[in-house]
Amino acid sequence: MSVHIGYAAMLEQFPPAEAVALAALAEQHGFTGVMATDHFQPWTPRLGQASHVWSVLGALAERTRGDFGPGVTTPTFRTHPAVVAQASATLASMYPGRHWLGIGSGEAVNEHVVGQYWPEAPDRINRMFEAVELIKKLFAASIAGRDVRHAGPSFKLETTRLWTMPPVAPEVYVATAGPVTARRAGRVADGLITTSGPAERLDALLARFADGARDGGRDVRRMPKILQLHLSWAATDEEAMRNALTEWPIAGMRFGRSDIRSPFEFEQLARTVRPEDFEGRMVVSADPDRHRAEIQRHLDLGFDRIYLHNVGRNQAEWIEVFGRDVLPGLRA
Image 1: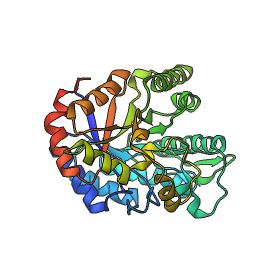
Image 2 (image 1 turned 30 degrees about the horizontal axis):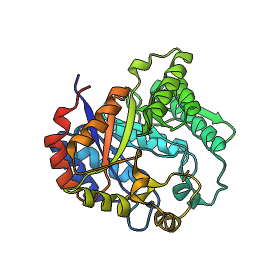
Image 3 (image 1 turned 180 degrees about the vertical axis):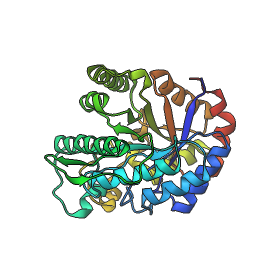
Image 4 (image 1 turned 135 degrees about the vertical axis):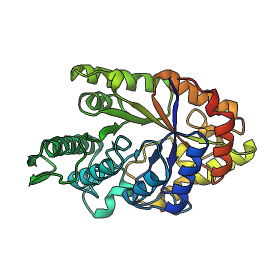
């Protein structure tokens, strides 16, 4: 079985045309698929970008041939879930069998901009699962050629359907870092998305996801387990660490960030991050073998797809090196 290693298009870090060109370059060097981030603001002002993910996904699909989807979008604050469903169904109609829908509960830096009350994590998670229910209900009814309505605690949908709908609905993947949410995702979602971490945390996450799948009478072996993996590679260790500290200090922030509202607040917090803060959270190294071992560790844990994000601006050089020296040595 071939290994699925995709490219993470970081739309908060690169202008949209450059992100699309880099994704196409990655595919030329052996990457298979694209996960594009959905941000209204960047993490820090230095990153400097925040293009509209649904606009960029269409361009990505035209320039590549693998799978693609948002990693992840939040259909609960900035955008009503029916509108997310329409965007997703349109892409799935245009690019059959390639598009998937990744959904998360959101972070204040992106979602508070519409001026709604920013709730605690349990409320955000409940809203997310209601959005998943609404989206899947709308997909199913539209495929069947009938109208549907929804009236729940957080969302209403008047009687309607999606008039542009593919014969097969896009798969809906839920992003989570916690075991309770992972179990709920196993019951209702088509797959799981998470980020890298200690083996014991990820083992527990995958186990709870499998428990949820069994609760729902589903075969977890057919449900993708997806990882977004941040890393810092450069020609020297010093450059790799400099890139980590300047471009992606959030990887070294050992506290929750869901309630922070401004890139300028993140900028202030980033000044406290030190090289040792990345230990155990992100590999920072010029050695391709260290990175290959980290990717393989996650494959061995049971992840089916891994989308890589090198945090530096040295994307073309990194893509070439990993395509030549890292990807061929990985095994499923």
